[in-house]
Image (cartoon, rainbow, N blue to C red; front, top):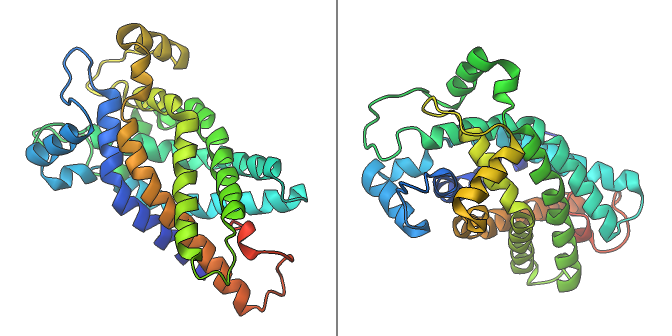
Length: 301
């Protein structure tokens, strides 16, 4: 169990460190004012943040995903594996259902974590040294939101998070399963690591593409109220106003940054988890494994 927790932390921490700057850019692009845009695109946003806020500006809010990554990774891979076993057969449909179940349950942790992350990422936009610092860190952010708005406040964006995560994780695990089967990822294959990396990366891309417009809405709802101004009355109101003011392109804001982040982060996560499971199974001489290629159920912890 301790080795599983260490695996979840190591695989998750590496992904957060590599991917967080891209996530910061994504959030900034998703919520910026269309009438007075600060950034012209992904690379301009990167350049502006580094120039105006230093490289550390790209890592604002990193404390929140770092705090939650061990629990989220353990929950996601654990629930997916147990649900898949409960469903009985390892079929594409069951992979999707098991992944969706994992995505739905982890929203309990994911939503407050992303709320704090988003608020921290937007704090001090364009400032090298913060003139006003509302939050000291991610935990302080959640505490202050709770004191002001209660449980409802720290769960702001829960419905949109649920709508995003449930199908997204279904496609996540389904794509990985299909890719590893198609590429023939087996333990004795000398090219198994590159195949796993490619499968994991593509899983991340498909997962994000499947529900990305919902992520834009979630970010806008969670950022709503920053600066004391509330714009949206809920999901449908946010969709309506965003589309009316910016057209359909609003639902693709930050997509380039997201896809640049999705491939390496998810490649590393899935490959680390799968290689670890291969090692554990070989150590136990496959006594607890089902027959067949061991990689086809990478999430059975």
